[in-house]
Image (cartoon, rainbow, N blue to C red; front, top):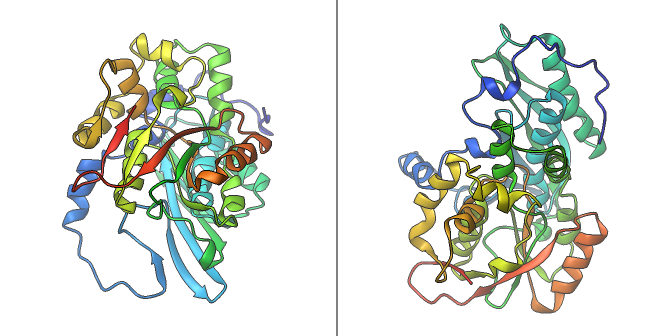
Length: 359
């Protein structure tokens, strides 16, 4: 665990999570509500240089600069998922950079987005948040070149992240092919563990596991982008595995099957979910996507909570040719993603609308 270079916050200050109504990517607006909001947004003709825009809800926008270079642009920010300000900064920065990696890009520049209740938090605490984010950016070779700050009712932190990618190496969430295999890079359960943390039911081992996965940069996405057998990628964040897998299915006009017994989980996640440590975002996610999800008989409420659990700084979901699946899993493992596993496959569409089929 990376130590903060700054002194700890004063014990007199309120815990960060007590200042926010939610935390992490669980704060995201539910997919169905977001679709309603965007439905009325004015549109304009899409310039040819805009390789990736709003069409499939991908992880970032991509703008072609030249024959051999494109710009990846994204932003991500949220409220605290933990109380330690340095850890909060690290998690938020890791999460924001992940969108660039999910497109196959290499981050080159970041801008900080900071909103803090300055009447409740000391400058030391706020500085620790920024230091945590800067430490992650430094480990990724990315300068934090500026940003914007406001006095906010709730603490908010994140990044604008810019990256570069060769146009041929862009990996969308909408290019999966029937017959592809699916590999998930990180275990599920971050939302459940964060809910347990708020209830003071997450032990030290559970916290360490949650922190390890949420601060592990998805740099492997850049490597996968150079592999022609990797056809599509997305990162699993606030909409849960169900929402992001269904997004890939819809964008690719296919069905996706998930073998749920193969899905990696954080060690404490199932027990904590059974004990009621489930976020409200999990139920909102199900309300948004449940109509397009086919569940097997006996699939209980705990499993459904895991399927829709909002991930903060979650893993890459990779669609690759069948012959490449062992190589993709091995690459994940070699880069420190010990839980990475093959979790399903892409199917030819069996209905007019794409479905997520859970086995």
